Length: 151
Image (cartoon, rainbow, N blue to C red):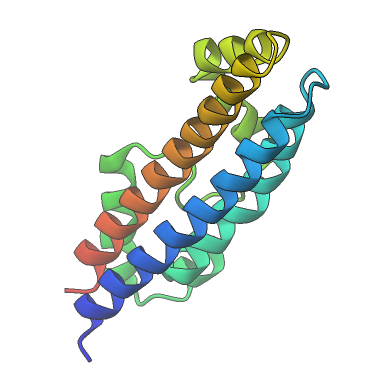
């Protein structure tokens, strides 16, 4: 099996994982405790983002183990993509910044929780969308870097 097809398989596995975690986020969003879902999302992302990088072979320690040319190629591609997670140790601060980029949706989600049942469904939908969107973006970044690095 070629390295390119392995990267394609990893991408699909990561997308499946992202959808499963987004469902957890949606479930937590239904609970009418203010900002509980944001805390759970941040905790999930601080584990999930590095796990995805690791699966693609792009965790910081894995990049450092590359030969000089491959390492340069990887860092160049990471810089070109402008990813805020790739090649970094993911901290809650980085996750919080990423989540803040989706602030309008999050605020809507928090407000929607307090509208009877229909609002909780809106909050769950937004919870699913926000988490999945953040993780899919990271998967796409990792996929592009891995394809460029493993030619």
